[in-house]
Length: 75
Image (cartoon, rainbow, N blue to C red; front, side, top):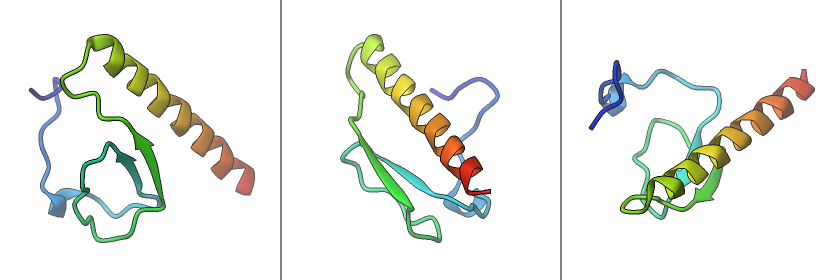
């Protein structure tokens, strides 16, 4: 199931990025044309409750905000 307005993308459709983060999840990530800058080592919530998904979503959100703040402080 895909989120409304979203579609699957081929690796070749991923735009060039400045930073690449692996979520971890004990799943091998495809090579996207560059090495990952960090691996957040999050647990894969597949097959778990909605609450588990929400916890992982909140952790991702927290880490993105922290990353944004670190990048801003560099400039």
